[in-house]
Length: 307
Image 1 (spheres, rainbow, N blue to C red):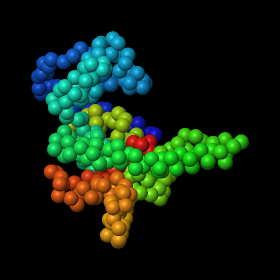
Image 2 (cartoon, rainbow, N blue to C red):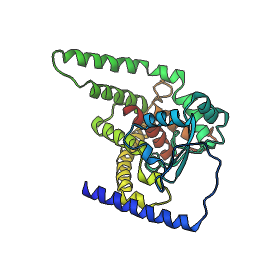
Image 3 (cartoon, rainbow, N blue to C red):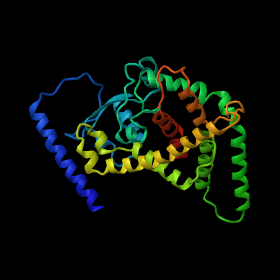
């Protein structure tokens, strides 16, 4: 705890010093931005979010400053749209203009340099993988093919609860286990060999990629990734995840080579089989690599659903 506090204090001091030096060297640029709350030097509007759930804080700020407002989050300049009409303008009408995504350090590493669907930059690869999701991974036919799997696992859950009659149960953990099993069997074709490790990694990954991190709020200051311990933590997590995914993909490749009747012909493809089939085909405009497959399976479904 002391080491973390010391690192945080040192980081803030260095950031303040760098900010002052930059402020002295270059004149401020005048930009046409929406109105927003008053900003503090260096941290901007971060103080408006401290101590609150972010969506609650944004709701309260929107009531005061309107549905379109500007927030300065450290070095990151953000325009926040809080009404359905404005959100539609950003996400649909002007999708290309606002399609660039803010880089999140942890997410970039955990999704293999941002090659999953959620964090991939707008371009040919992103459009292709979105199409693959719609037509192959999440099509009505594909979802329906896993209906018996879902029914079996729900029945197993109900039976497990029935057998625990009269005893306390942790329903949250049972739901986590149910979701993990369904997602793993749909994605990998079998239950995760070590579900506790898998769930733990999923929770850590979502927490690391989804929270406010000092290094993401001050992206030009690369040293923050090291001094806060984020770089070491995320890279260690990524190595564990990669080992699990690599073993799964290798097993699928070996099964495909040894199978007398292909899984495709028997209609038993899981999501890894689908992506491996597409990887080997010549119908893709942008070839997908094994790392891309890992990113789509992990970042696009397993981590989020298991969390």
